[in-house]
Image (cartoon, helix red, strand yellow):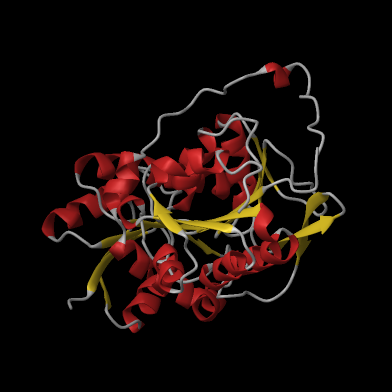
Length: 357
């Protein structure tokens, strides 16, 4: 097996040095070149094309988003965004994911040496995941800027949905690499009669708020970053805040979320395993669990616990995944009742309302 050839594009010499050292120490990865900006990078890429590009989004001469759009139009290549952990950086990075980047790694604004020890593994995993990514799925979803779809909500809030019975269904979704585009596709197809939804998308803190805001802008249902005690109600999707775990709790006839600190689980915080286990305990057969595109195995065990507790469970099929990692592990464990292409997930969610075995 040949090494994954990586090109690093960043205007900071220190960042280029730190990222190169980190990746070159990992087995099976070789940094073939570095560039100060996309214009230099393109000259170098004409001589030797990389398997994966690690890209800063804020750079002189040509910003990362413009470069990404050109790259995806000319010769689609897996890109890992390396962005600073700021509110402004979060919005730009979401644009990058929408333009075809595979995943995000955050870099600190100071203390890059500490980053080496703390985030080295994350960077290496992101590059390995990108090298395996099914870019046909990424590029196929390169989005257009969708105008805000205004409804009567812009004038007055919708009538609150009364909970008619204690068997209200809820849907729990877990996803990682490739998930931002996949979630956008699924949630955009849902109407306000859909069951309440809870989502763990592996993302750094600060990024999930911008992501939820973007989805809320293009979806008919309400999408927001979850806060402690939020109720799970029909027509609403709650996204777990980056950097914390999200659990589902039941109180009488109502479900709500519990946002908790704690160590990473299955190497992630938020963790899909944590969410799914809480759903298995609180909702049992009143739930539908869905595991979608992503690297690694977070969520596989939790989905098995949901299935054992009587919940329906779905996995995204290999063909429609950007990275068929998490769904594959869940399938191997016997956690997945059936696999579906991404295009059929929304109708499966709409069909679950009030449906029990």
